[in-house]
Picture 1 (cartoon, one colour):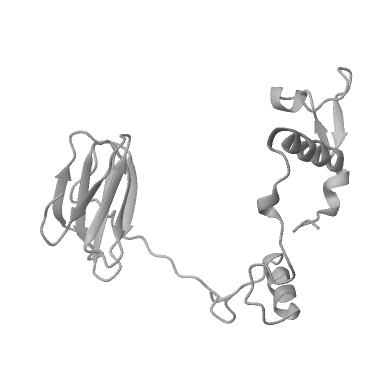
Picture 2: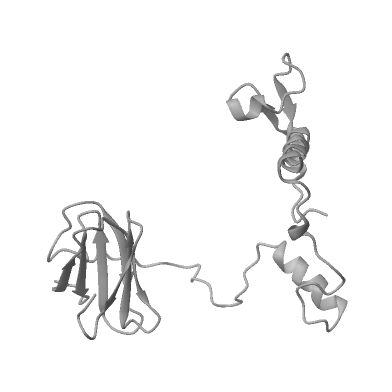
Length: 191
């Protein structure tokens, strides 16, 4: 069966005339609205008509995806995946009070000349990066006060849309609006 069943689906009315993609779901030109359940069925039917049966989404055999120990583990896993309860017990935030304080902007020492597209913090040191469409990756030492700029690297052929420290933080992957990307080796200071 489905992973989630919402009893309110039948109380919802979907306007089939609101968008071109929903107009295709009408069975008659005069039909204007359907219930949520009927809408879902029509979407499923349309998906099957276009893509066929989604055999990749079926569980094969009694222990599919599990370690084959017992059916209780599979049932427990299925129940866990249908739940929104916390996976970590006792590690939540205090219900009494959360203290928030304003810190200086990370890139205060050198602002970007375009919208910042990426921010990432080094996994083990007080280093952080910002990058953006101005084609520049900036590295800052995070001290919570001045956050001085350590280095800036300009990529003349790459407006940057994503950048992140890789694995142990010794390299930075830089991607953007081009068919290529760069890896910056922080130890060697080379691209």
